[in-house]
Amino acid sequence: MKSKYIPVSIAAACLAAFMAVSTPELTAQSSSPLFSGVINPPTPSKVTICGQDVSLDPLDYAERYDREITSLAYTHGNTLLMIKRANRYFPQLIPILRNNGVPDDLVYLACVESTLNPRAYSPAKAAGIWQFIPSTAKEYGLEVSDEVDERYNIEKATAAACRYFKKALAKYGGNWNSVFAAYNGGMSRITTQLDAQLANNALELYLVDETQRYPFRIMATKAIMENPAAYGFKLTADQLYLPREVKIVEVSGPVDSWAEWAKAQGISYRDLREENPWIRAPKLTNKAGKIYQVRVPLKESLKRSTAKRSVYNPKWIVK
Image 1 (spheres, rainbow, N blue to C red):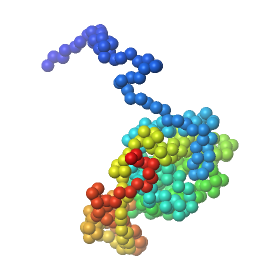
Image 2: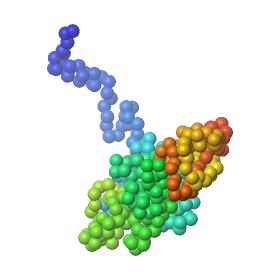
Image 3: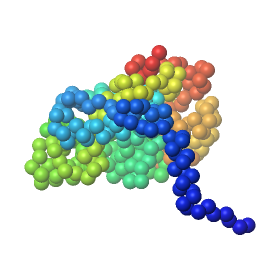
Image 4: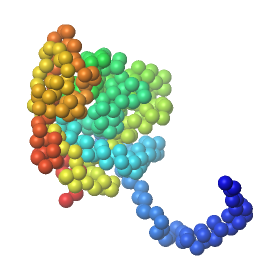
């Protein structure tokens, strides 16, 4: 088949004529019928995170916060999912934070780490809602093996994160923003750079871009999660993901087949794995006789028609 080519000069002339006819002239004063309005989120004079005020008077701080709030406000899909998932997972996470004596605001660090996806896994081999790498997970008491990976166990991983937070907070003299930077960049690196750069807290440090952004991303996440509608995220109660009602069954021996075990509990293998992502294999050897708590979802909580409706934070919805 022979191809037909249109001379470049003719094609350019046709395109120019089309644009002249079909594209309205845009001025600074007029709004465009082709594009929706884009509003820049406001930058406050200060933010409060974990009970500590951070002034945004320094231009550098203000611009770093602006970058994160703008990014989150216009990354609609991920931010929407984060708000929806919060209704399911905040009721699990926040009581554990409180029982361990750390601020509720640390839940926003989990939002940044994984957008509250309990099965999140990164190229750096970080896993779970809190994104522990294997070595750090083991250091803070989590089991990581081919059959069991407690980085995916929300309760145990949250308790491990609390242990990390307490250690880091003591190391950095009670400064939470240094704790945030250490969680992203590593305690050793932040400690070294604080000494090398003669700085008092991590916000003053010159670091790799990801770590410099990290504390401000947590602040921006808190701002949106506390009032989503102010940033254009308008959800109704039925759009939030519901917490699952479960019963806890203890397993202290081997399980030859998790599929058979799930069937005996009246649920599917898929429902078992979804509710317990820490199970990493079709069976459990468990030679040590360790006790594992398995969450078994109640049947009525697995259907929209029978699941109990609940809204953890009324500010997440519009009526």
